[in-house]
Length: 408
Image 1 (cartoon, one colour):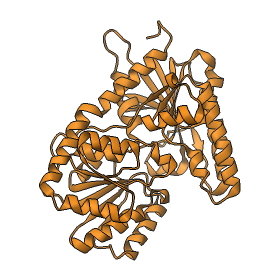
Image 2: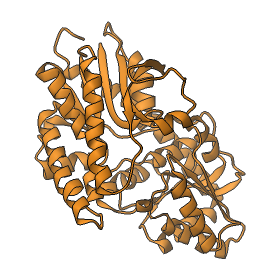
Image 3: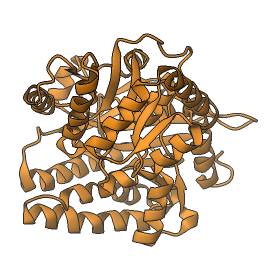
């Protein structure tokens, strides 16, 4: 069977769900006489990120290449982003045009999976009509970010109109894959989506083959985006409190999809707090290398501010820490974190406050033996309850339930 994936991520991407599930495991998920999935992605790109990735010289719009166990087709080239509300409008217009042109040359698939972008749901529905089921994966409400803007025009176009666009996509899709149970509840209560049309499809991780290093290089590690809405100043402030009691403590901040401006801004904060000898901010590394960095740390920090769009999230970093076998300090305001840490016994939760985070870190650092046991429990829990094989099984079952009988 053929699955077409439309995503708001540009190529080349470094996204665990897209790579581990849709591109890696799903094409081999057929069993008991069921047909395997042939998965094709449509990506856009910019000239800049193609050059930065060292892409083949002949990679042009319409070109198809293998990607893990799937394939991707370059839908087209997007212009370099500018800033402000003009960019907000033009970005969506450009992406819609690029995908609509690309979809015109795509044979009808058995199902379509759309990640996040509501305009792509509409484009797929126009192209394939009602004969092809569409799953709309919602992991993040972009309009909530725009609604926080200082610009009234951005709040109107990105916030108000953005919400209406999401509502339309939710109405016309066949099923919604929510990033977490909390997101599923929000879609039902806040958007009126029927409960039977929503399935939580959270993030996961692959458990490490061996336990974490009992004598690691780093005392703490944070992995994730470095954008301002992550409020990493709070984590750095907490680490300054840690160093007052444990001066030799070292923190690694490992950016994921970080742009240079975010990393430079964060390094300036580190210097301003007098933490240059205690905190290292590193640029992104390929995802296969992440596990090695995590296993060389005592504690993984998943302190996330309780903003509306984070409250319904399924934080990748939390599960990657647990999979690496290191204990976590996680902000308990995020329901998915509070549940996972409580169920697994793989760490501790605290409020997203500088003093609370510091207290939790110092507590674990003072109990290294118990901390290692927590890390082991977290790794075992990932193996049994939240690994990519389990998520792939759920996605495969969902898609097969939507494909008309006889196709599968």
